[in-house]
Length: 465
Ligand code: FAD
Ligand code: NAD
Image 1 (cartoon, helix red, strand yellow):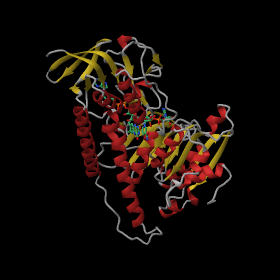
Image 2 (cartoon, rainbow, N blue to C red):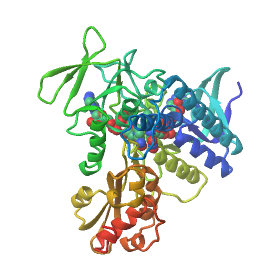
Image 3 (tube, rainbow, N blue to C red):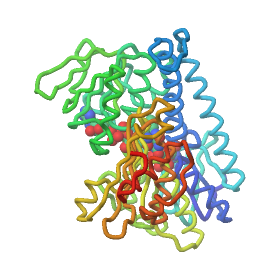
Image 4 (cartoon, rainbow, N blue to C red):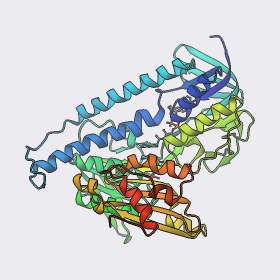
């Protein structure tokens, strides 16, 4: 096979890698991208998209179950629905398939060459790829490492038949009767909630003092309340110790120190993700590391000239939109543009029920940073649109510098608030002050009005509360 030489080689076609390659191609850079599995990476194939498809199906099913129970104020009656999870998964797979083709098409349109296979570094400028038709050598002036992350496996709970990661959970064809989720973070709660809505008896085992420890307690309280309403048992300060000899039973060290046995048809382990930095020759480059992650500067440049790293492989927050923004920036840097990571905030959304969105600093973080702040808090129970959606749980919270009212952080918890992340992100990125949000006409009736009202409230000018 003839060797390939190119200006830019991207390893991994997840959101970081494929966006980098598309932008580079658009800029006329001779670009090659290598992917061992399918275009779209974790996010598109076994992450963001499939999980949101499953969450949506579970919400629809749960809504109808609720209506069928007759305990709703809407005057709707219906019969109890049936769920065929294998059909739901087949539907999810069609969405994934369409997006796979979409990414391939976009790469092609940008004249990016795609090489299918596992890449292995020979040296900092040369990579060998095991393709179906033999070994392909690729030499590049610049290399972008975008190999992403994989689920963390607990030594006491190796993945197998009963113990599964999110990847297998997103491909189950029947709803497990009893599901134990180890790790009450993003994936555990998003998927745990979905499976509970689909009829599983779910128990969450979380090592920390509360679920979603990355968010503050005020934001997670409505989520904890809903977990309880869904019949999900949450054990906090609890540690999974391994399987009982007979299998199908998880041994847990509870907060009290006593051992609890949890019967389970499936045990979903979601205790974080590790960067894919081992086993493909990268270690031999001896790049500077930041713990398990690749160390990068504000241009995503690693310690070796001409080698960049983006996305999950570079650490927290391990979010698709961060990977994409890094990918776009690196492509422009390789094209000679003057770019540096100057984002003010990376929005985070947790697709639980209700959803959580957080952008910028929280009140605690601002306090720790020594900033004097004012906080505006507006509940959805005072928002007309939320009432019409039976979504009164939750609030929008805005915090701003006390002196000049520059907005430092915005958070919300509530039904459908993920869609407010765009407005929140824009406000912070554009350096909005409380008066800018308070003075912007927000369409009525929308949940977005709660954002305006939170700004008005922090200025002492609230209208609807
Ligand atoms: P990845 O998407 O992991 O892609 C890396 C690619 O590199 C993979 O395709 C892999 O096959 C390939 N690769 C690795 N090694 C090699 C090699 N040697 N040769 C060739 N190819 C290689 N984030 C959000 O922002 N929102 C969400 O709602 C969300 N939901 C999630 C739900 C789940 C269940 C999971 C698991 C993750 C979720 N994430 C979400 C996180 C998101 O998926 C990641 O942050 C994102 O995919 C990271 O992108 P990336 O490009 O860095 O890496
Ligand atoms: P996570 O970091 O969100 O949660 C892991 C949880 O497991 C934590 O609460 C931690 O305290 C707990 N834990 C760790 N070890 C434990 C143990 N031995 N026993 C019990 N609990 C334990 O990780 P995740 O849910 O695996 O998700 C991985 C990453 O994927 C996230 O950090 C996030 O970046 C990304 N993700 C994002 C979204 C989103 O944006 N909506 C959704 C899913 C995943």
